[in-house]
View 1: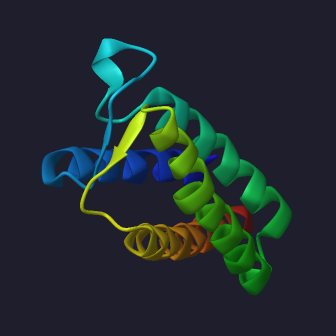
View 2: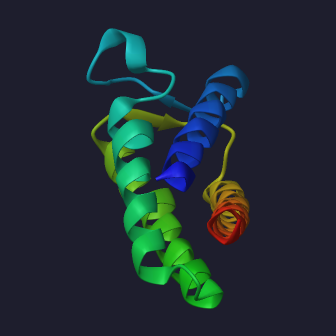
Length: 127
């Protein structure tokens, strides 16, 4: 759970950067106040997705990276085009390749964070 919460915080920061630097824009959202970091992506899809991906792939780094690349490609190309076609989202200056790179870096950071968390937990159990 800590890694999923960190993913949510980092995705919130990324959404705020996207809002500030016009990387992308959500025109429609569930509430008027969640256009910067939409609830349906940052606080639901990414949170739950992070938990499930870690549940099935943690301690298998290359499988983790491959699964993340597949999910990020689907989100960055297929799902965003779908949202753009419904006029919910609009592309800005952030290309799909930039999105894939940013999400891959985020995935690696999250993986190392989880390793650090587990190392910390193992030490607490020993003491």
